[in-house]
Length: 277
Length: 340
Image 1 (cartoon, each protein chain N blue to C red):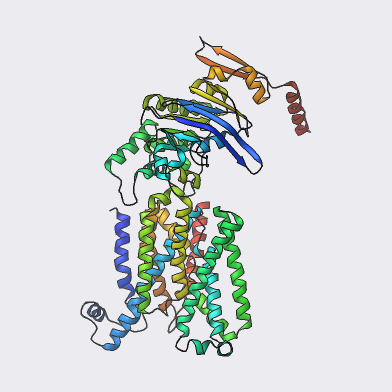
Image 2 (image 1 turned 135 degrees about the vertical axis):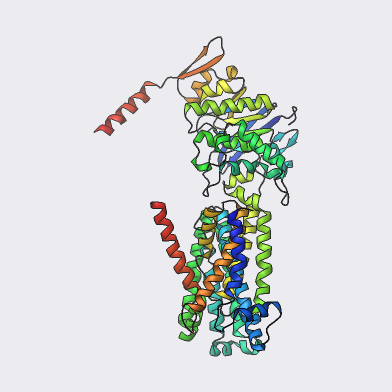
């Protein structure tokens, strides 16, 4: 994993049918950084992640390690970029070890066998995400947080220098949300892995990401450090809801509080009354 | 090697040897050992043993292995435990081919279109499997075209296309049989019930390379097939070329099933039941399932064929009837166990 690796997107655009999903998105992210992609539903977060990971054709506009993604063949790209998509249940009961072992796939030819070194890298990755007691447990029976950590372990075995995650803390309780994000930040800072993820919770994004980019209707509204991106005026404009930013304990923690407008509250109350009758 | 695999290997050695003892002609164990080691003394026994019984056991093993592997592979690539080679219209396609062959070999029709003059040496016993093979390939081709061009490339669309093609080809072949002679219809219906009674030794040499090459390719691509189990998008991010792998796997399933169905008729439930047992017993990764299906599927078919030969005196039960009966009971037991 080279420290010079950087992810550069130049004027990334995507149009599906008549709908413009992304328009001229540019970004530049250095190695070992954690980037959060923010924005309301339909802003184009998942599409941007797919472009950045090479899952959608990007017309030579995304490059990783000074090489455009289209110049990588699928296996070489998988050695460089690991993607953790939103969870899919496996129909057949694969265990955690078998899921994590799949990370070896890009590094193995059709005829090559699994070596003791591979075994060690699998157990190291499982140990690093704290799931050493669940190795033989069916993946489907793990909790959401454990599954997410299992997929991160698979990404570690894949030995990619860039990990892209689509809403990694979706459906997780508050404990696992912090646990997963803490793990990702520690991997980025200790192993110099670049992490890009989409998030809905602005407070988590502010506290765990080094770099944020805020999307709205497929356009990049702002990017930079959390302090630069998360301003109450900008968030109010993008999320259409009033908010206040608070810096706690010498600016070490960041807090965004949203205030639902009165008319929304009134609508919810009347809907609730309707349910009672 | 763990105990389960050792048991399976012993079963693979014991089953074909055991099955050689069963058949219309009585062989003592001494005669059998002599036939295998030194050759039979009696030329009639030699002909029965080497031309009928041994090829039948061997082909039975390959048929079971092939159907089980095809079922497991389809279940893997569609991520659906109920996918089966027959769901892709292979049997209906083979049935249509067989119906056309039967109708054409009806003397009046053949005479009218001048078929007998064109192919004076073509025998019905060869024309029927050949036509069935073409029909099976045609149905798989049709399913692929419909799934990719008309419905989209999702796996559920492929299953829907398979069901639609299956019913369409069945309707066509029933219509042809309705037009033809009742005797011809009987022949096709009996053929569709499945049997190893027509097996000749040359067929073993056709089946063997098809099964061996298919299994070898599936074992080579084992890691890629495993990645498909966690979804197409996830597999792609691991570097797997999903569409190419799916087409390759479908081609393998089509070749395996078409070879089997065209010669042996419709033998249902093997492709559903054996992979299910192997996954529960040995494991779910593709290489384990493929190897387990070869060994267990082969042994299963060898014994089902023995049952077909010995269950009724002086006649054989079509093998498809036995596999369907065992398969349906098996799934009822599995369902009741899961509920409890």
